[in-house]
Length: 160
Image 1 (cartoon, rainbow, N blue to C red):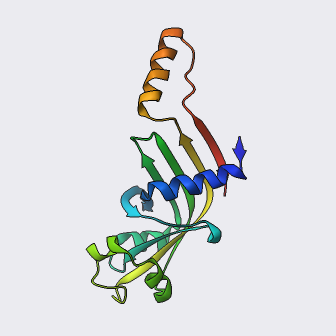
Image 2: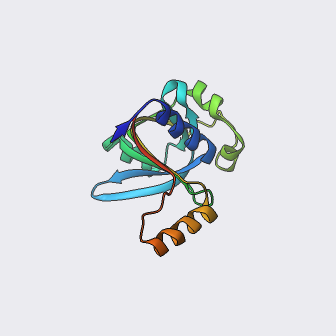
């Protein structure tokens, strides 16, 4: 069952809290994933990333803009999967807005001409939000003893 409303806010909250995701693109018949630092802009219904003009992901997105963002906080047992359309631009103002400490590992400054902005507009998401690892293990053990299915927290499919 696909939901929206408060569940979409939950998607944004979890993605923002987790911060890093695996950006999944398609390269021909292959699927590729790489870790990226996400900038969450819920008012714009967008996720932003800084990327380099020489990266393969830019070419992959140009050929196939459908992507997946997979956020995971395994210690907290919180996960978000976002499906959407990606586009790459050289919007200098947005690059300056997104410039932060993690970017300094890749570029000297926000004016570096090789920096690009990757924008993902989500269309669909799903999240799993459990009460945490220890509680989850206790619930699984109790369920195994009683042959009942454990309540592992909230899960929702959300139209974005």
